[in-house]
Image (cartoon, rainbow, N blue to C red; front, top):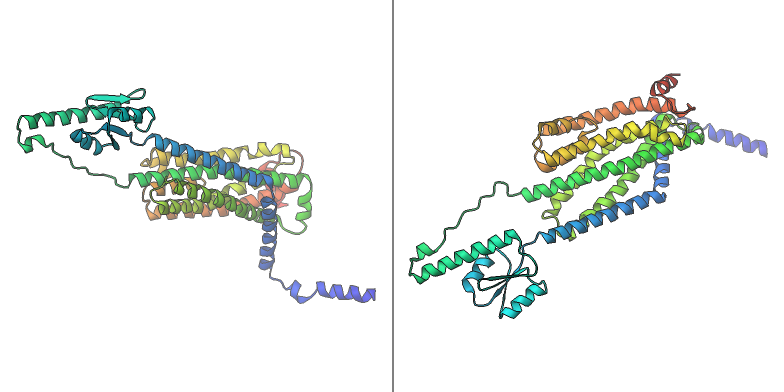
Length: 404
């Protein structure tokens, strides 16, 4: 009976359905298995969700401060004693005005901070100090109304009393919307740089931990180093996108509810554009972090091997800074075309102004090509570094080991 069972089991393992599995399908299945393992581990990681919670809380605090600052920049309110018709109408054309029946009610409104300033005849009443800009506005309006009343008293012609109005021409009517798009893209890119740094450091530490604990030797018995590398990148990428989508979604909803955006649909488009450019940037830098982690033999070596990658990654903030401070700079056009920098510079530049299509296409093509070259070279370094021990492994040593 036992012999029959063994014979049947051998027959199953050598059946044509398993031996004729296409190599490509088997490779994709192994990559999916590695990616699924990384996604499961990451989504169950408390640090993953705590960092998300901290980021959302910081975004909420930032949103609250922005709202308070916006309130501070609102127009001051003016309380006016009833019966000052000409002065009241002239002020109402410039500031929010509340007309009150008697002088005591006017002073009470200022005392209870229901009004920032009050006008009683030729007297200006404030709680503490009169701001210079507001003082000039009130003084100019009072003088203009007084002159007009004196001219009427002298029987001046209506054409001599009426002041000519000036026409307003807006050179950039969409300036506020452009500013909102640019700031949104810049803040989103900088937040993604920080999240990418945490994700990259996490994958480097994970690779080093698997290497130092010899778990990687068990994994390599089932998958190739290249499959393991690609699976890790994709798995952590999906987990990072979940985190980023939740964070950006909450931030956009909160900002829209608070009324900070005049065109929410444009802001949503800007955020999605940032995410699209983030994907190739993520592939570049997380690959570098994974390769760097394979060069460390101990957890203590991770910071040493990831230091150069972190410095290169921080250089990507040059793009958003240039896009916000000097959007017309020729340097920004150059930076937005360089692989590794373009993912951060191009979306902010596109949020500020229209970018020629050929520049967007070239920047994207160069970035995709850089990802392909990096995966080809990085997978060789990763292969050679995984099974090398004894301190920090040199890149040349890893490449030599990969050839053998």
